[in-house]
Image (cartoon, rainbow, N blue to C red; front, side, top):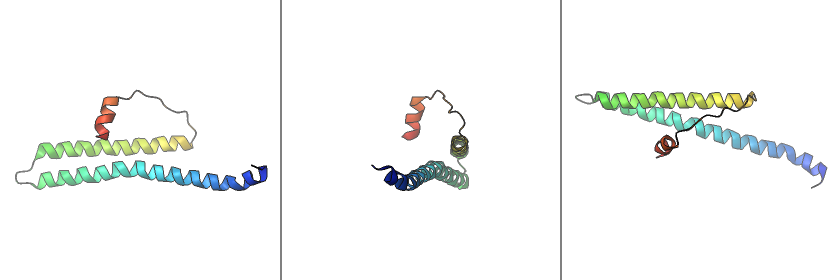
Length: 102
C-alpha cells in the first residue's frame, strides 16, 4: 500500500477501533448493571412476600453488592488503561469464573 493511502486510511482505522472499544466498554458495564437491577428487584419481591423470605432477599442483596463492586473495578481498569498505568496481574479462581459464567 502506498504511504499516501496509508495516511488517508489511518483516521478510518482509528475510528473503527474507537467504535469497537466503545461497544466493548458498554457491554462490560451493562452486564453488572443489568444484574444489579435483577438482584435488587428480586430482593424487593422476596421482602414483599408474606412472610418475607429474608434469606433469599439477603442473598440477592449480597449479589447486588458484588455486581456493584465488579462494575466499579471495571471502570477503574478502563481509567487506568487511558492513563497508561502499568497492567496489574492477579491470580484468578478459574472455578469461580466458570460458576459466574454459568
